[in-house]
Length: 145
Image (tube, rainbow, N blue to C red):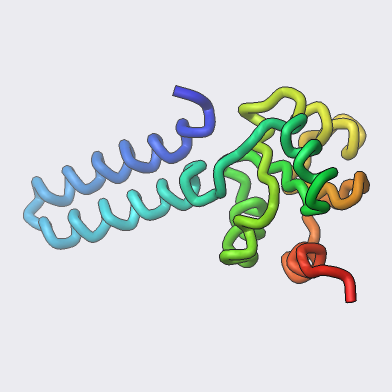
């Protein structure tokens, strides 16, 4: 199991333990709703809510061709999740690179952030932008007027 799944699995295990304790004490309805809540939180913190990640080299190649921004992210990052949710369907038009799965992506992020792996880092036309506003990112997807 990769480290991207550690936090979601921890949520599921803890939720299951608490739900089992509630079910034993005679509150099956509360146990079911609590377990559902923990599973939803686990889903939000998993890589499943993000578009499919590609490698940094491939993302740079594609970005050079189509001009779309590259988003360097990692699972469990609340700022990455916030950007992903606020972008909505527009997020699928970006190139997403999971820095935990791609060492080249982590190197790009460290180079842009003085050695830190600060995400989300969005690269537009070769210039990195750390934790940009979702409206600005969405505007980068629009063709120039």
